[in-house]
Every structure is written in C-alpha cells, then in structure tokens.
Length: 193
Image (cartoon, rainbow, N blue to C red):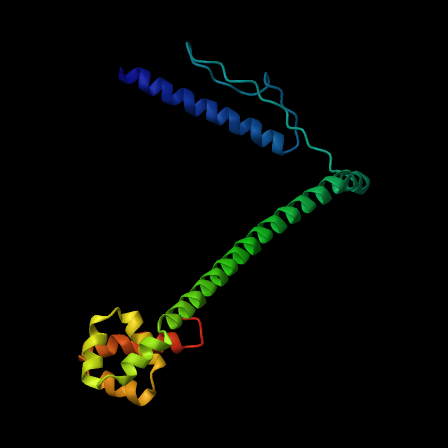
C-alpha cells in the first residue's frame, strides 16, 4: 500500500470521528442537528458517512399501565406457578416410589434369608443329631469336617452345648472357625444385611 493512501485513509477516519463527536455533543446539549448541517470532510473517492438518526425519548409508563400489565399476566403467572408445583410433586412422587421399591426389595430379601435359616435348621434331623450325640468327640469331629459346612453347623446347633464344644475342640482350627461363624450367623435374630 502506498504511503500516501495510508495517510489519507487515516485522515479520513479522524475526520469522520470528529464529525460524529460534534453531532453527538450538539444532540446532548439539546440542539437539533440535521445531517446536512454537520461539518463533514469527505476526501475524494471516500465513502459518504451515514445519516445521523434523531434520538427519541421513550415515554415512561404510568401506574395504570403497570397495573393493567400486572393484571393481564396474573393468570398466566398463576398457571406457570401451578405447573412448576405439579412438576415438583411428580419428582417427589417418583422419589417415594423408588424408596418404596427399595423397601419391598429389602423385605423380600429378608423373607428369603428367613426361609434359608429355617431350611438350614430343618436339615439337622433328630435321628442324625442322635447319631452324632452318641459318637466319641474325636470321631464326630473327623466326620463333621468332611460333611457340608452348613449341615455340620446345623447338627452342632442341635447337639447339647457341652457335646458340641468338645467336638469343636477336637476339630481342625480352620474348620471349627468356619462352623462357629455359620452357627453364630444362624443364631442371630437381626437381619445380617
């Protein structure tokens, strides 16, 4: 770009800015300025500045207009408020439904646990318990170590506590600990979950 063109464009911008400031100052001072009266400097080949628009003050609404506006939108505002409250109630109902479902699931789990406990205790028939009650403690401990842990614990629970203690004393430590844990959880009256 030639140096002369650069300076002429810069000077044109300054002139346009100065003209805009003069017009704005005149308008702010309360005078009316027409676009033709403003001092403008336009260079040859430059664009003509846009016409200045007259500023218009808006009318401030009075109290009756405000009251009419408020009364006109009162029904819509009330309807919107009711809709928001209805949506909130639906969300609360969904939360309650989820909690009720969780409670029903927990109750079903507890009932299943109770049935398993009853089945567990029913496994140890009186005849089997009498057999183990008549055995020597070391032989009973050896046999119970080979049996299913749930069945062995059920048998030990049906035995006399002294006889069961002696049998557990004769068992391997690991097997005795497992059986003791099963018996303790079966004897507990509170839901383990």
